[in-house]
Structure formats: C-alpha cells, structure tokens
Amino acid sequence: MEKPSKIAPARGKLGVLLPGMGAVSTTFMAGVELVRKGKAQPVGSLTQMGTIRLGKRTEGRTPLIKKFVPLADLKDLTFAGWDIFKDNAYQSAANAGVLNPQDLEKVKPFLSTIKPMKAAFDHDFVKLIDGPNIKKGKNKYELALQIKEDIANFRKTSRVSRLVTCWCGSTESFVKPEEVHSTPEKFVEAMKSNHPAIAPSMLYAWASVTSGVPYANGSPNLSVDIPAIQTLAHEHNVAICGKDFKTGQTLLKTVLAPAFKARMLGLDGWFSTNILGNRDGEVLEDPGSFKTKEESKLSVLEYILQPQLYPQLYGKMCHKVRINYYPPRGDNKEGWDNIDIFGWLGYPMQIKVDFLCRDSILAAPIVLDLILFLDLAQRAGMRGIQEWLSFYFKSPMTAPGLYPEHDLFIQSMKLKNTLRWMKGEDLITHLGQEYYD
Ligand SMILES: NC(=O)c1ccc[n+]([C@@H]2O[C@H](COP(=O)([O-])OP(=O)(O)OC[C@H]3O[C@@H](n4cnc5c(N)ncnc54)[C@H](O)[C@@H]3O)[C@@H](O)[C@H]2O)c1
Image (cartoon, rainbow, N blue to C red; front, side):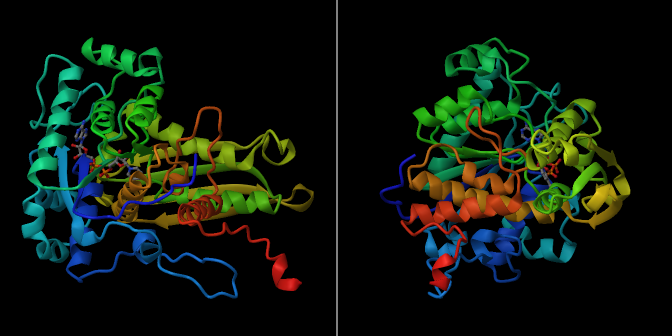
C-alpha cells in the first residue's frame, strides 16, 4: 500500500452506527457524553490520552496522538444503533448495570433519545436470547437492503459527513468460511436463497461496506472476515478491521506470553477460566456461541509462542479456556489464569493471575479508538483490512497467508509507526546507535 498523499480533514459530524445496543455500546456512548460534559476522563483511550514520540529521543517531540493526526473531535460524534430489544440506550444501560445510577442520571436525556432501529436477527445464530424489535423480509438479501436504507436515512436525517460502523452485537454461533463467502456474487446469491451460513452480522457488514461505510467487528464471529466482503471493501474503498475486542484476560495473555518467549522460559500449560453474569455471558452458555469465542481466545498462544520453532519449550503446552455464566457477578467478570512455566534445567514454577475486571469498562475505549482510527484511515484513502489496528483485537484480521501478530507491544509499535508513516515522519526502530557516535 502506498503512503497516503494527503489526509482529508475531519470536517463535519461523524455518525457512529452500532449493531447491538447492549452493555458495551451503551457504556461507550454514555462515556463519550460524560467526557464531552467534562464529568469524566477518557481513561483507556489511546486516541484521547496517548502520545507519540517523533524523531530522536533528544528532540523532545511527543505530541498527543489526537494533535498529531486529524481525528474527529468527540463533540462531532452522533450515534445510532440496532437491537432486537426496544429499550432506548438509557434503559439498556440501566439493565446492563455497568455504570452506577448517579453517572447514568447525568446523561439520561442524551441516552434516552437513542432508540434502536429494528434488527436483522436470526435465532439460529444467537440461541439464548430473543426479542421483539426485528426486521421482516422474504430473505436475507431483503434484510440487508433494509439495513442499507437505515444507513442512508441516518446519513440524511443526522446530516453527518461521514459514518463508521462497529459491531457490538452478541457473539454468533460458530461458522467456518464456505464457498458462499468467497465472492461478492456468491454472497448475494446466498443471501437471496437464505443460505444457513450467512449470519446476521454479515448482513450489517455487507450493507455498511457497500454503502461506503468502514466497519469494525468487536465480536469473534466472522462478520466482515470473509473474502466476499473483503473484495467489496477494496471495490468500494472502505477500511475494515476485526475481530473480537482484546479487553481482559487475553490482553494480559498477550503481555505475559511474549515475556516468557523473550526470556526463553518454557510453558507446560495455561488454564484460563472466567465467571461473568452479563447478557454476553448468557449468550456464551450456548455451545455454538462459546465455540466461536473459544477459537478466538485459543489462537493467541500458538501464534505468540511458535511451538514449531521452539518444540522443547512450547511443543507440549496444554491450553484450556473456560467461560462460566454466573449471574451474581453481572458485568464484573473474574478471570483466573493458572500458568505452569519452567526455567533453567526444566525446573517448574507457577504463576496465578486473578483479574477482577469490568468487561465493558475495558471495551468502551476500544470502541471509541476503533471508530476514530477507522474514520482516519478512510479519510487517508486506506482501504481493506487495517492490520495496524490488531492492537485492539483478540483475533486480528490479516491478508490471506499472513499469520496475525498478537504480541501487544509489537501491535502497539505497528500502530504508532503506521501513524508516523501516514504523516511522513521517520519510523522508530528503537535501534538507538546514533546516540553513541
Ligand atoms: N465486553 C468485553 O469485554 C468484550 C470483549 C470482547 C468482545 N466482546 C463482544 O462484544 C459484543 C457485545 O458485548 P456486550 O457485553 O455488549 O453484550 P450484550 O449482550 O450486552 O449486548 C449485545 C446486544 O446485541 C444485541 N443483538 C444480538 N444480535 C443482534 C443483531 N443481529 N442485531 C442487532 N442487535 C443484536 C443483543 O440484543 C444485545 O442487546 C459481544 O459479541 C461480545 O462477545 C465484548
């Protein structure tokens, strides 16, 4: 890909489209409004709080990222979403129970105005929930066209100059890429014949991309990660990325595993278990949805530790992931990791991690960053898979034949170097020999 010759300014309003208005979406929208009102800080957001070093360490140039690249201002964000339930964003946020009532009260008038559009839903893909706010159509193609109409209407009525979609809907049942996902033509035929391998999230992805709207996928289901939609992203010059927000347990895994590998410490096994009680946890009780999540969570260690290159250290590791729905905890997940490592002469050691985290509090700033960075990429003319946004995902999308980069610090360097590259600054290699001449 060539370096962008120019980046169009972030002029006008940016419309944010959210399929799925549950815990993550509403925590994100409420948070943006609290920050806009000066009542909270955007903690966890690289676009809002992060800096970037430019040039040599001696130059002292470290601007805020949002001053270095032209990102949309928070005041220009305006929101719309779809859900199978009719609750507005305030009611949904109250149900999700992530933010306390005092915080929600401060943004009640704003959240109450955001009412979900009717969802394209298929119970076969999310078996444990059902709702009344659902589109009707002869086939999946008709549903996808209705989503396109929703997008066009929102564009017109909210007078936005640009749009970005971020899938924050439930995790769908596991589907493998098939022939029907291979080309745009086969994909349209399959929508028309109601093929069982076309999931609702793919309809949103197809509608967004063919409307020229960038699309991020926050869940582990395929959605935009199929050749048909990737081809369309190129044809329509649209930026896309996914899959599955990297928030709690996997975030720590992609910090710890690179440390073991860097020091050539061995790994016998890694057992990860979770308890959570939100709607996401309920959906993951279904074996189909759990399998999608499990695949996403499991792939990380194989790629980071490269057992094929280090069979003595990682050839026999046992990696297990469990997720248990436990209602009393709500959105406050607890993730335990038992890690069996070994050191010099093979002597065993153990590490225990107990992360009492808040799922949606960790996910909300990721949604914000993805929206702002995808909009930036779009204005810079960068189309197709945005691998530099791997930093935010458990299963980063890559070009065919490329293995994904999971190490958080490599991902962070890739992201910042991409920003430097977009702006014509020198890339930073951390070599540093020039300081000793
Ligand atoms: N919170 C995290 O830390 C985290 C991390 C990684 C991934 N995710 C993923 O993000 C997604 C959202 O998580 P959440 O905690 O907000 O879940 P949630 O259950 O609170 O919200 C999901 C919403 O999507 C709606 N929905 C389902 N199918 C839909 C469809 N076809 N169209 C429109 N709406 C639909 C549901 O009704 C629900 O309100 C999930 O897929 C989850 O796996 C979350």
